[in-house]
Image 1 (cartoon, one colour):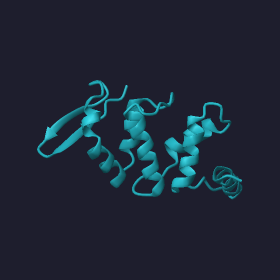
Image 2: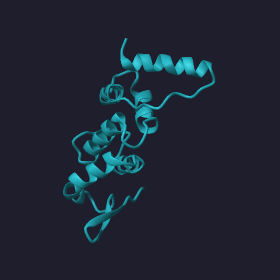
Image 3: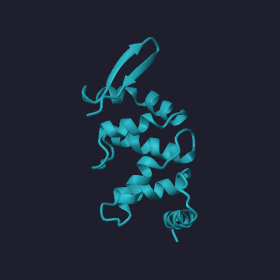
Image 4: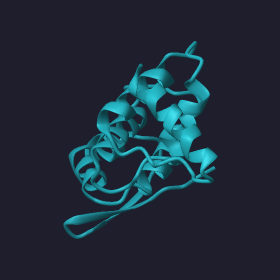
Length: 136
């Protein structure tokens, strides 16, 4: 049984107890979820998208690092997911909080500056940048 199937089984067990699904916090499980998102024909793709977007703990968990990396790849055009635009990827990334977000923004600032002006506004405030995400 895959980690994802184990997770679905746990969701059903928790549902029977009146509990919500546990957030994803493991890198391996989230990597499996991302693989399912990339596979257009995967029967779990829709649920995987939902889990990826809304059920990953923000901060510095292993899953947060995997999510931040995948969102960065979408923002830079290295990956494409029809349901996650560049703007929406920025929005999701903005909710990540903590170390993974800051590291990604710091390492990729120059590449992000090349994005269309309508998707990224910025201003220089000394040695740091303040970003404003403009959502459609």
